[in-house]
Each structure stands twice: as C-alpha cells, then as structure tokens.
Image (cartoon, rainbow, N blue to C red; front, side, top):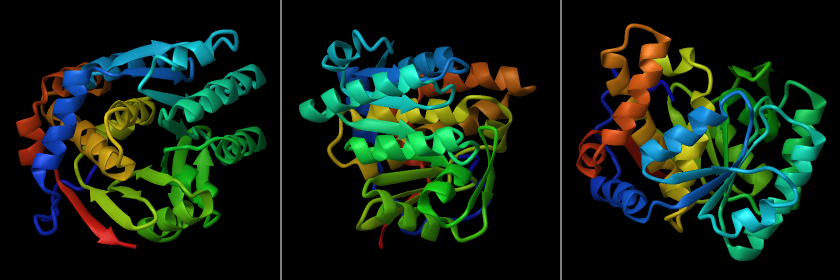
Length: 282
C-alpha cells in the first residue's frame, strides 16, 4: 500500500478508462457496503466508504445480519477484534450474501498471530464463497502456507517473492487475493496486477488496512471482475494517500487528509495518475 513512488513503471499500465469507469460507477450507484468489522477502526471504515462514494452500514447482531446484507452491494468481514458471536454473525451474513450473489470481502486481520484468528480465517474461507481475500503481507503469507510473520495485527513480512506468495494463496484459497504492501499485488487464477500508488505514511496510521478493505468492497459492489475492481480500488486509495501525505504534518493530519483526498478524487485523476501494472499471466 505505501507504494514505490520512484520506480518508473509506465510500461504495461492498465487502460485508465477502465479505472475511471469503475470509480464513476461507485459514485453513481452509491452501493451499500455492509460491514461486520472490528471495534478499533469501525468509524474510519464507515467514513472511508463514504469518501469512496459508497454508503456504509455496520451491523453484526445475528438477529439482523441476514436481513441487512440482503440490501447491500457488498459485505466486508474483518476479524480484527474477534469473538465467537461475531464469527457466528459473519457466517450467517456470508451465507445469505452467497445465496444472493453479493460479493464477500474477507480481511483476515492478524491471521497468524493466534490460532483462533488463523482458524477463523480458514473457517470463513472454507464455509463461504469469498470474492476477495484482502490482507497484508504477513497475513497472506500465513494463509498461503509459504511463511508469513504477524505481530499483533501488524505484518512482519514474508520471506519469499510477493507475487509468488499471492499466486500460492490464490491456489490455496481459490479466490481473488489482494495483498497490500510496498507494492500491492492482486491476482486471480489467470492474472496478476501490481499497484504502485501509495505513501509510507499509510503504514504509520492504524486502520489503513481495514479502510483498504472497505474501498475494495465499494468497488466490488459495482463490478463482476473482482481482480480488476480490487486493483482499481487500491490504486484509488493509494493515490489518495500520496496526495494526503503531501501536506500532512504527522499521522493525524494525514488521516484527515486521506478522507478528504479520496472524497475529491475524480475518475480523470485516477485514469491519469494510477500506476497499475497488468494484467500479467499467471
């Protein structure tokens, strides 16, 4: 997610009109994004969803999640502050979303830090049709089985090549995988995309990974190709981060600017300034 702002990657960039069209569709349709998420970043996730152009709802009571998700365009499942009751609600909502064809975005926050988190991530992956698995390098490395390090909910990185790690995670899970890092890597069974937008300040603020999942879900709600929509979402979020960092004095002024910059980002801005490479064949 922080990006590599110095490397010239002008070759093989995705057609900007595709990215512009996706952002315009989010703003036009304003899809409802249902979150069952963690208590630390819930407000930031709601506001970044609004800044992206979608509408958030946060509901996790088992008594209402099936009804709530029925009105949504996408469902985010975030295991950052996990409890057994929340897992039950996630399964109810996820199964209903699957019946209705609503994309499920799973953010396996802290997978690898404890057995409960890792087992829950796999339970959700095994029980539900997950459209996009969005995690940091450590989480994706753990779930890929290639080796990943997680300390609390923060990534300790991976030992191997990021693209190969994501490819292996796709093979292990059968879903689109979006791994955030210095360069974001997104892949499905056929293609790999790399997003080089972002700024290191995004690593110095709690919740940017959770927010990235919300933006990813906002784009997934209006798309059929979840690899492309995930790449576009992370490019938009990373570009907003670049612009926010330009005038920020520290983490909290950056936080405010991040919402502002995403909210004023235009389809034309995304088309011109996204540094999104691919697709490359797997």
